Amino acid sequence: MNLAMAERGALRAQSHLKDKVSLVTGSTSGIGLGIARALAGAGAAVVLNGFGKPEEIKATQEAIGADFGVPVAYSGADMSKPDSIAEMVQMTLDKFGRLDVLVNNAGIQHVAPLHEFPTAKWDAIIAINLSSAFHTTRLALPSMIANKWGRIINVASAHGLVGSAFKSAYVAAKHGMLGLTKVTALEIAEIGITCNAICPGYVYTPLVVAQIEGQAKSHGIPREQVIRDVLLAQQPNKRFATTDELGDIAVFLASEAAASITGAAIPVDGGWTAH
Ligand code: NAD
Image (cartoon, rainbow, N blue to C red):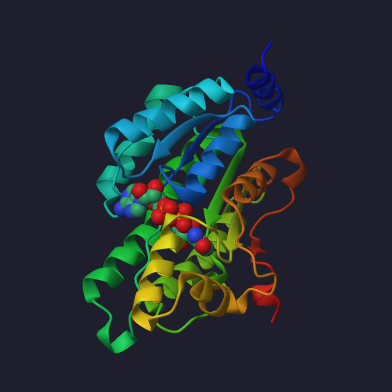
């Protein structure tokens, strides 16, 4: 057995989500992809969602299937469109017969002063970062209720707990997501289903790389200075969290050890919101 095979065997051995079906929105990239890989590593079938080049998405699907030996499906549903979201959830139920772990992760960002904030960007951010989670949750719950087990994990943000200038729509959507998390948790608390929010500070993903490039250009300063003095200015540990760390936290929240954690907003922000 070569090393790669041994590593895959070890990964397959963590199988507490075997026979469970997961759906991760916005999982063709960044945090969502890290969470999808981690859930697959714990044995769950995975439905990927998000945008990207078809050949790259196909390669991602095949890589997760090969690495972890689980079925991997894909939906290109647009999280700004309720009909498209309904088709994605129905596809999952038709294909796998159940939906056990729902991760609401898809999100976009736009930075502008409030009085100049484009109204179309406001609408898109509220739709993708907040309303999509309402739609996926309402559509996924009947399957979880029927099975008396479920995990809903909302990827919010430190910006669900505190504000930052120029991010009105994003901060409003993420605060809203924490409200949705609490109400969802309260409604399903007695039937074996939990709903929690993960609140990352900065995680090194394409979304953050774009912000680094943008701020370096607008302030006329080097990337390294943007990272330390602008992006990580509020983050006391001065490091980006990784997508693997976020994946492991999601797997923990989906485990039996986390059965009594519900309605919580879990900061993963290097101490940012401890200020
Ligand atoms: P990313 O840009 O790497 O990934 C975003 C994913 O969402 C991609 O798969 C993209 O295709 C998908 N997506 C975007 N619009 C979509 C739409 N309309 N329909 C379906 N899919 C869509 O971003 P990321 O950094 O991995 O962010 C993921 C989540 O984590 C977001 O909700 C973001 O707000 C949150 N978050 C990120 C950070 C960070 O530092 N990166 C910090 C806190 C919270």
